[in-house]
Image (cartoon, rainbow, N blue to C red):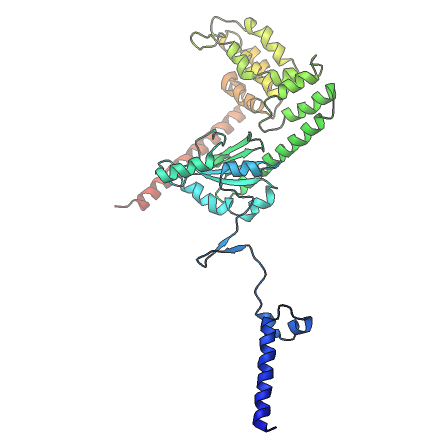
Length: 383
């Protein structure tokens, strides 16, 4: 055999081996690992991105961030749904919070398995925007306040149990305060589910006590909670029925004249007329302290109207404060004593001089701030 023929034969064998390697469906482990360059060119593992027909890649949908309320409700578990309402065409602050807070992964870390739904609330929507808003919000509970941004927390049955509207509850745009408030409300909701589950295993007074714990949680409670307490403790031996049935506002309305809307406790009413019913509430320790203090305020107001009632009024203010000094009413009583009790008449000369010096200093600081504001306005005015 000549050298030329041998060379052609070797080329044919090489081509045959290469062709067989291409069409052979399986390869042994040695063949797979023998060529580092070839193994480096293998396609990457599957990712969360999907290939579109036009060649573009889009991120896969986050299962915890549905597009509509109905999708969120169908996927909601015990942690329910957290809804962020923003104003795309009228509220820039809510748009900034959408990016600086709502879209961040940190929100998903603290919200358990809650569904996260962003809802646009347009002020002047065109037809397409109006259709989009209707599609997203179909079946959603109504927003209690027309404030953006607003966050609503809804359970898996579609009942809203907490609402966080505006800056008072959501804080700055970085979302730190919003995260804190969401965390607290979500924890209270989980606590409520835990207590309700425990109450289901109990009977009688013990069950009523657990339901009473539910009633104290700072979130919206089940609508039938009071009926459940009454059923567990029909004789109200725990006082929880009275505690949750009493309404300070309703008691106030009972003292009002339905014709003109004014309190019956007017100049023609005496302190004695109000004393009996009001003191029943004040002395009922089963009621919430702030409800007892609210009733006391009726007596305090009436004592102020009556001639010679100043001494009794001061005694009532002191007694009201002792019920709960840390409540809203308890904190207000000290100021009420100054406004209505003329406590300044008892000042010593040294106390009077110190008070007047402080008032003079405060006035000086106020005028200085006003001058600085006016100076700033003059320097920033565009002519």
